[in-house]
Amino acid sequence: MTDNRSLQSADSATSPTGATSDTPASLNAFVEFDPVGATTAAPDETDLAQDTDDDLAGRLALAIGRLNRRMRSSTGGLSHGQLSALSSIVRKGPLRPSELAAIEVVAAPTITRVVADLEARGLVQRQPDADDRRSVFVEATDAGVELLLRARSDRARTVLTLLAERTPDEVESIRAALAALEAAANIDPTDP
Image 1 (cartoon, rainbow, N blue to C red):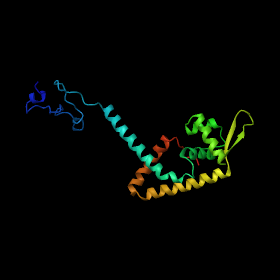
Image 2: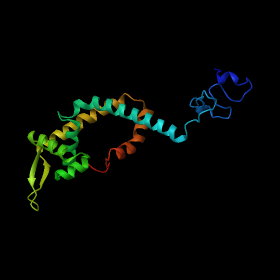
Image 3: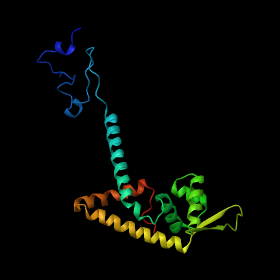
Image 4: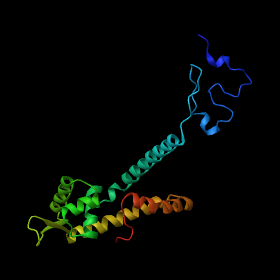
């Protein structure tokens, strides 16, 4: 069987990979040669954008994961989920468990376990709803507020240390991305 690539003349405008001289250089690597003799099409801009988005998502997930590990010791002995729930209760409470689940974007059984653990640690307490005896409100105790403030302070110091390791341009890039990151995390920067 004859290799179709050998049939192309040296002065042909098609490269051995099947890319033509008018194919943008950035796409030449994506053009594949079909051994039957037809050139397969380069991926369209949607495919390239998806590859870029996948790369962005992977890099962002890795960076967030590593930052979280570095801050893990600054959570006052709570998991990130517990600390987040306690923070929401302190900022927006008292809250019904269903309201807290919506804020934290978790299922009702998950928030029930989180609240039970926080309550067992003395960080929150349940109060009956005077209007609906079937429902309760969850509110932070003084110990819960104190732990949250201490954890926030520890985390802020950890982040300040991380920022001190960056160049001024890198810190400015982080600052510029902060609003988008807050929006992605459903954080309202005007909340205390």
